[in-house]
Amino acid sequence: MDVKMENEIFKIQAKSYEQVWEKDKELLKSIIIFGANRLPTSQNARSILITRQNRWKGPTKRLVLNQDSLDGVLARCLTDIKDSWGIELAELPFIELCDTQDYLPRIACLDKETNKQFGYGGVCKSPPTMYSSPFLKVLVMPKKFIVRKPTGAYTTDVESPDFESLEFKWDNAFFEEVLFEELSHALFRQIRGEWGDNYVKIMKELGHEKESKISLLNEVTAQVAKESIADRKGWNLYVVGEKIRLVWQDRAGMECYRAIDALSSFGKLADICKADEFFTFPEEVGASFYPDHFKFQEKYSEFVASVRGRKKK
Image 1 (cartoon, one colour):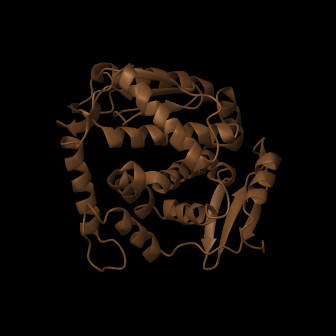
Image 2 (cartoon, one colour):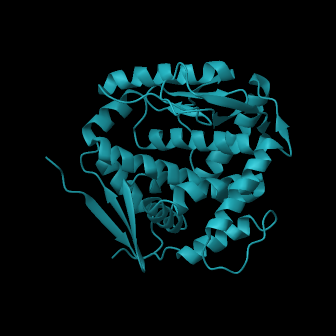
């Protein structure tokens, strides 16, 4: 039986779509010059994505990824996590470096291990930029940046996929941005108690639909965290490029982004992410909480205490 959600509504005004676009243009002002259009056009999106692609192919600062270089980047990212989230990781995921030919098979192995816990689930069919598992507490990354180029008819066979893997040396800024995002995802799960064995327990109780909404919240919260430090880190192009897919092309992603962005002015991301869904009104922002989440009361009270900026309705 479904349990009724608890809602909180705050007198906080979220950015308009036009204001969100102005923020993106400001981040990209030294890279791409846009016109005076109030909202992004398909040509604007294409320019951003092509410029990002060209940066992948010809990085301004290349990173030769090995254990020594990873340790240096990781130390910086952990400091950035604390600065942007207001809290440190309770536990660092186990990090694995893989050669290109071993990367997708390793992910398939981890997927199958996780699927056994749920009794269902697919296997990764295309190499992601990096791969993480909150259940297994692991973060897997290729030693080189991999781009998937189809070579014929589409196939879902992981062992003999019908695509060519193109390798590029990591752009230092891009690698840092992606590692920061993956560590943010791990922190998100730890804060909410959805880490290790608890991840399986909670997601089974909540069900697939609610887990999908929480996963979107995880992605968008990491996006807001990245934006808060993008300018000083030199991540601008990569952060806005990801935002095209996550926010501008997804109505639910945009709704979630505008709400979290507004609330971040009044509380820490580490507390804001304890809500389970977000929604916006013209002059208000709302958050919903699932009472069937085993940390419901703790998450709910800490969220409300953190967002003190304006009188609650």
